Amino acid sequence: MKSTLAFMTLLATALAQSSCTAEPAPSATATAVPNPYTPGYFGVISARSASPIHLLSLTARGGKFYLGGPGPSSYCPVEVVGDACPPGNYTVLAGGDKTLAMGVVVPGGQQAYVAPDGSLSYTQAHSAYIPTDSIIDQFSVDAPEDGQAFGYLHFETGFVACPAGEGQGYQVFGQVSNAIFGPDCLGFSALTVATDEPGAWQY
Ligand SMILES: *[C@@H]1O[C@H](CO)[C@@H](O)[C@H](O)[C@H]1NC(C)=O
Image 1 (cartoon, rainbow, N blue to C red):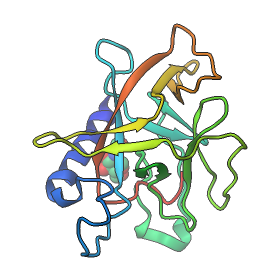
Image 2: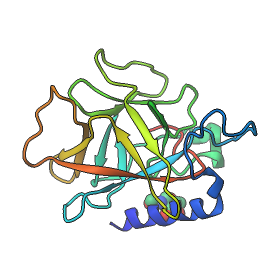
Image 3: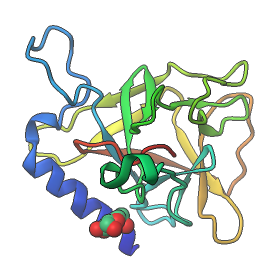
């Protein structure tokens, strides 16, 4: 839980320092001023009160997403990028206007999608490969309402998390109709906290 709190503190600080970036994906008509943060970087915290998945960071590991368990898998070519490597120890997303991406620096980026088995997934760096029949365009983000620190990330049919095995926390799925989710699986709200930087070179 310590890392979740550290993450939330970090993001809350980022939010306070740059409140103009708090609203993801402003509409095209909103302003003509170039905004270096138009990708709308944000972290996600799960919310399902009185459950084992309340207030856990959404974590990218090995192409899938988890609540709880180890921190993210990430990589940065330190010998090339040096001090400019992002921290890589928490998970940042970007976009959320239909499509969703990882908040990364690697050229080409990494796209998030819901695989045919429902698993929330992301492409490998340097690859655009997404399995046939994956869902790539059913994401949306609600900006925080007035006075709220959190917005919401939505997948059209909802997110659900299922126990992922010893020490791995819960794996996150989109609630696709052709997948069966057992009684151990829990639906949750995905709270977003805006941040102004990518979280990793690549996940
Ligand atoms: C990530 O690493 C940085 C620097 O090592 C540290 O300050 C920060 O607290 C860490 N964040 C998390 C969420 O562990």
